[in-house]
Length: 225
Image 1: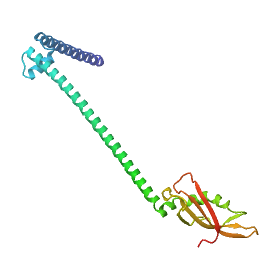
Image 2: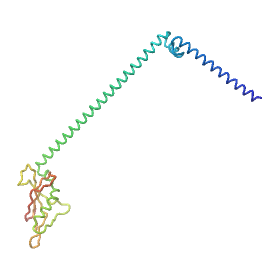
Image 3: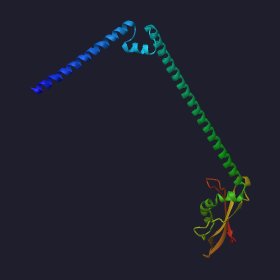
């Protein structure tokens, strides 16, 4: 029996709560209806007007319209300002890139001019210019020197030595051509009796020429001191 009484009490409480909520909803619905009759959107809108100190629905409506218009105008102004800011930043970034590219071009031109001047200065300095081709002369003149031997040619230089230890400006070409005569004494030519004799040889070439054109090769018996 106690269980049945407890169940009945719970059902009673639920019914009371439901009726209260229903009554509250009906009351609130009536407030909305009354507010709309006065010209407000609903009861909440009416309370907002009263909180703002406005008692006339028409005045409240006009104020809301003005506020909405101002909010839209502010939003449009903010959007315009945002676009202007983006355009200004894009323009500033483009200017920076243009200035950086200009500076890079000027730097490259300056570096090239400096390199060209250095090369031109080097070309007038025998030591600087000739040193550029010492290794190339040892490679590309070697076979042509060997061909000068009537029989056999034998090199006497060590692996760490260059075949050309001396150089001078060519006597047969204009100096402005940059032709250098490389001179060495690390070869022996075989004579008709089978004996080997030391020779001094020379090879004319332009150190800076990537084609390694040989202008002249000569050799004569002797020792290079």
